[in-house]
Amino acid sequence: METQVQDQNIFLIGFMGAGKSTIARELARIHGMRLIEMDEQIEAQEGMPISKIFETRGEAYFRQLETDLLEGLSPEDHTVVSCGGGVPMRACNVEAMRKSGRIVYLSAQPETIYERVRHTHTRPLLEGNMNVAYIAGLLEERLPKYLEAADLTVRTDGRSAEEICGEIMASERQ
Ligand code: S3P
Image (cartoon, rainbow, N blue to C red):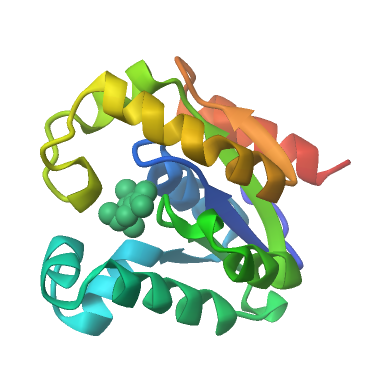
């Protein structure tokens, strides 16, 4: 089912492994909107994987690239943006997202996140920290910022992409 293109951007925020990329792809397809996967766009722009950017340029450099990307968007872009997990930690990023769209927080329990990311090696923050305790600690630290930024929170544990997209779309109609 195709629905109307949204009149603003949709930003999906949440911890690594919350399902942002999958849901963003699906929402963009359903609404016929553009899709930006922030990590992929930054990797293409810099010509290297995120892990290499962290290693050679440092995290602060990467965080500025995220901010630049968000500040370059306007509501007319009609884009679904899958944000990197650290994006809402900077107030200026939240401000930039609010100016051009709606912010949806995809929540997940640490155990769910662990199961989704445990076999991956693309996230520098989890290298050497791939365990539920570390994930739970970082999530607890970040949670207030995620919740503060969100216009809508959608739980993802044990739910299909279809259910999650359905909840997001139902809230758009209200
Ligand atoms: C990060 C999340 C990653 C990526 C980078 C840092 C974070 O994105 O931007 O590794 O600070 O949580 P995903 O949330 O898409 O995995």
